[in-house]
Amino acid sequence: MQENRASDDKTLSERNYEYWLKRAKGYSEVNKEELAGIQRSTWAKLLDGEILKHFGISGSDRSSISILDVGAGPGFLSIILTELGYQVTAADMAETMIEEAKENAGELSSRISFCREDAMDLSFADQSFDVVISRNLTWNLPDPEKAYSEWLRVMKNKGLMLVFDANWYAFLVDEKKKAEFDDDRKNVASLGLEDYNIGENFDIMDEIARCLPLTGADRPEWDESIFTKLGVSHISTTGDIGSMVYSEKEKVNYASTPMFMIKVVK
Image 1 (cartoon, rainbow, N blue to C red):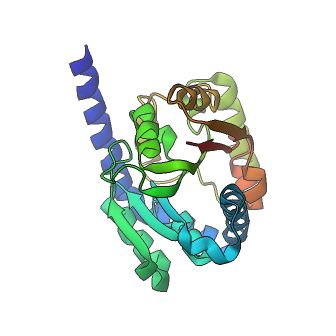
Image 2: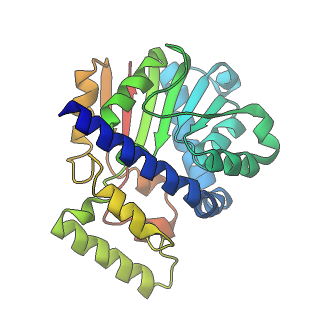
């Protein structure tokens, strides 16, 4: 039974990898829009506040903090954190995402360490980073528990982890969520806004998401239970963190799928 599960996960991982390789350009356009909008400042304020408060340091000490951005994609968080003055490593499985991130970072790219990494099997040594951060990744992983274990492994003792995610594909398995998701699409259209949930090959991700273990899971409760099992010293969750960082267009697009923030201390 375990061999079959491993085989299934490998196939799922390959399908996932191929999807994001092709999605990089389109996803990069979304990141560029965020960088050009209020999200550049709203996310910077949130992240900087959490990190400075946790380590009890002033802004002048940011360069002493090393951060791993897991699933960095086209580089949104990595760029913001580097602008603030932190040491940033941007890791992603898809080479095309890394190339987009380098281009989006521009002159900042020389200050960011870019690397291809499997979020569920990191190559870094134990306790390599002060902070591990991730946005919209955990839902997409074939083995999210293993990923969390790895992220904790490479994080220093008393380090900080910030996980931002949502129940993105719950509408595939929950009729109530499907109705709410459809209402979002109607509201987006009625306001003449761009719909972030419509695009080329999105049907492929729907198929992949149906096979992922966290589609339909009770989150962030699931995440809290896993971190508790892994023995962290502190965990707290903030619901609807999107209300603090989203643009008005994002708030309409994602009204039925609020983003949460999980804060973990090793």
